[in-house]
Image (cartoon, rainbow, N blue to C red; front, side):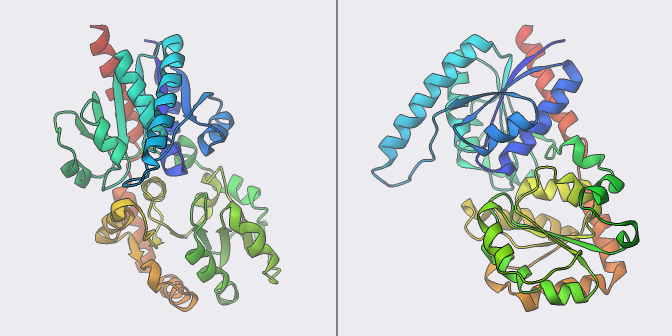
Length: 369
């Protein structure tokens, strides 16, 4: 069986990486021809190139709700729909798969106009606006969290699959990771903390961890701090600490290296990030982004906290003292860390991509009759 598939979704890694994982598994399963349609000069354009996918850019814009600017937004998305429709008419896809983000709107709307089957993946416990709207027309809506189903009017196309994680994450090699970070054999035993606020960084997290550098390094821990592109230079310029156990980077495309050697992760509660850490069984301290739409990151984080896999610190409560004390408390209690890791593994869904690909293949087969 051969398939031609358009994938879409973007703006942040949380929308991009899941659909890339689906695409990878489609190529493995049915040698699918993949076209990624996303925004101009976008993160998805860069990542699609890195992962070897053809990319086509369209106009797209988020909607300014209750604002005169909404007319311009609608016009931009209308132009994007026309672009996507013209490109797909030439590509002849069997299926269009969306993972959220406002660029998805133009692409799924074009698919509807062309009569192409569609499939959506919703990462969060509270679904985004685009996915809630297009779920009414989709052939399948795949969910990470069961709680998300309550927010969809239509229920006959809902599938609980988990969130697809790239195979690179699942099979990451620890020795290669140590080599990537230039960790010597003599220092491989040192416990590692990974701190990340995602591709954009997180100001609250960055300040708390920067102010904790000295105390955590004195505790004998390795710190891998992913600052976000816009924060990197100021953090490096204002840090006078020179220590092999302090690794500061703006961003890490190949996150598998950091996850392979981390013993504890500290970050936001985006669904893609949570799926990665549960898939590899890592305990976490989560600081949900307080301005996420419908506060969906809190809902995501509570799933892990309720299972015993994570500790939540609210963004407005976070400072260096609270963070350092919580990290020290966990590393002083190996049993607690081990139990959190086991709870994380129990939540992980390494087979999510395979489940989604099976649903995708069935949709195309039904279409072909």
